[in-house]
Length: 330
Ligand code: UDP
Ligand code: MG
Image (cartoon, rainbow, N blue to C red; front, side):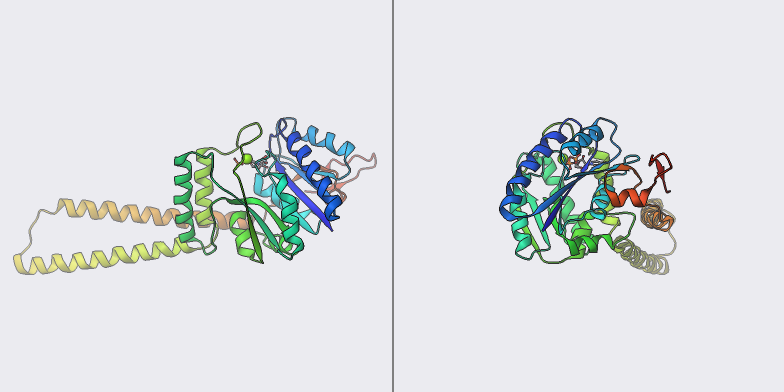
């Protein structure tokens, strides 16, 4: 069998070497034992440091190293997609470049794959994370799982092995907004979860900041189905019922006691609450329209600047008469 390891990397020039060395060490050892070939596909996600040149150095000595370099930073999801698209293995492993996904787990993953599992998922614990972060993410998963129809689990990320047919299933989902955490669950297949200890980055810093996390959080809730839209219907309905009850109450009061003028508080609170609900509802609808807008544009998920993968070169570049392949087809 052949194993493909996909590593999306963005500005990892300083630590990608450690990941590569450790990975090759593990792969070489177990490829002899379990008899498989392997390839490593590095995706350089438009890094502005020396990531690409470091990767290119690997491929000079190691024919198993493939790389795809994007024209700019398209995000990790695009990197994963490119890796899956151009993988040639019977099974694909997705892994981070910062050694937070320990390569030592790979033999175990392959083992389960050989036993017939289509997705072997590595789940980390939260040791070493701050209390507030742990609390917030637990809360987040509670909220998200309420809204979307697949079940997301805390600690489960992109580090996993995918069989060829689950890769095919993922590639058949052509959406522009790719929330892969949800998509992995959505495709199903028989899955096995293995656990590992939370790891610190070898070096560098995480590409996440608070703003990005909040955006990702909202993406998680909105990009999967239309339940938030549905909930605005419920909220609207509830507000209407409350309004009608209040109306009946006021009318009866007027009929019995007569009109009394004071009522500033009720009027102003009704206006404020209704306005709030309406703007929220419009916001949610707007978000969906925005997503539809991106989907209908049908833009490619990524653009490739250079690569040593034959299939990519055929698809993306036209060789000119001097043998230079710098003309992207798009
Ligand atoms: N990454 C990427 N494109 C981006 C941001 C991140 O390919 O725009 C890669 C990054 O190089 C790393 C992985 O995605 O290999 C995870 O990123 P990071 O370590 O910053 O995230 P964290 O582990 O903190 O969730
Ligand atoms: Mg990381």
